[in-house]
Amino acid sequence: MQQFAIRGNPLEPLEQRNERMPRAWKLALITGMALFWLQALSALHAEEKLEVVATFSIIGDFARQVGGERIELRTLVGPNADVHVYEPRPADAIALAQADVVLANGLMFEGFLSRLIEASDTAARVVELTEGADILRDPLGGHYHFHGDRAVFHEASFDPHAWQSVANAKVYVENIASAFCEADDSGCPGYTRNARAYLEELDALHEEVGQTIAAIPEERRGAVVAHHAFRYFEDAYGVTFLAPQGISTEAEASAADVASLIDDIREQRAAGAFAENISDPRLVEQIATEAGLTLGGTLFSDALSAPDGPASSYVELMRHNATTLGTSLAAD
Image 1 (tube, rainbow, N blue to C red):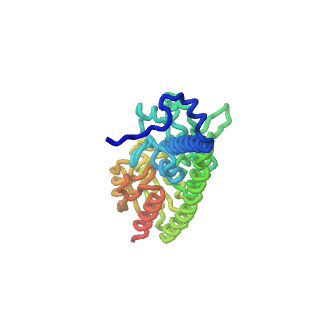
Image 2 (image 1 turned 60 degrees about the vertical axis):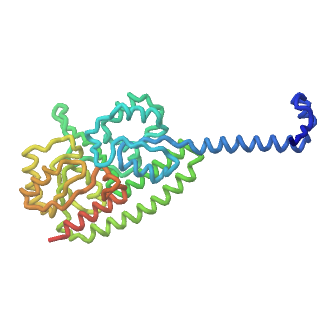
Image 3 (image 1 turned 180 degrees about the vertical axis):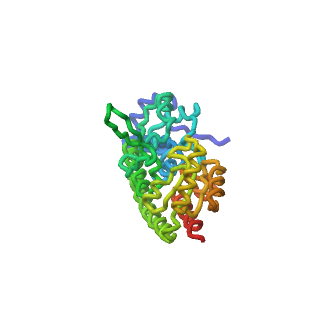
């Protein structure tokens, strides 16, 4: 049997053995252990992600473009879903409670959000992304109050669909980058870099949409949709939209509203009618039939399409809407 010699006394106290250990070995051991723990802590830190909640799919896409893989994203109202009528679930309150940042449109678009924030008791910063955007008021709203013989007009609420203008979408992106930098300082260079690249993409998109709409003859730039979600698109690119419903799909159109709209269609010579991805198309189909219009396809208003659909990102949404309008309205 082969014999192995054991150097030193295995029963020798550790303190005595350490005293005989060369100083260089001690330094190497300490350095190695320090590097091991630094790498372990670095790996642990790298796995931590910024917890982000976006209220609906379009904002979720903006957040992903800016945050990339550094964020953990939860979107409350998903593709093809209507924010106006959404009812939050217990899982949504849990998501808000765990969030670092909550991204919302604001302008009372997410009617469910205030009570959800209260139910979740979240400590997250809630960021309204329309802050600083060019905001329009609802032109169909407003009312008078009478004080004695004097009539005082109260303006309508703001139109919340600001993302339908690419210029406003850029403001959303800038606000997201600022919020992420504030919540995650070490990740700020990456957020800033991502936002800058995406803003350049949005500049190109704005030009593309403008060129597509400019190719439609001016006398044919009129369209019928389900609700007034496209006023910012109208203001930015020059298509007139008529709708039986106001800025919210919660409002039901009466027979009188439909009759008045058909008169407007004939007066303004709208050239096409379009369904919306978040709404039942039957009302628009009925109006199109009565007004002698052809249904020209589906526009994406308040939500993206499913991932395998034609508008699974904001860029694709705007491109799809412009192309659909251009193809249908330009045709005689």
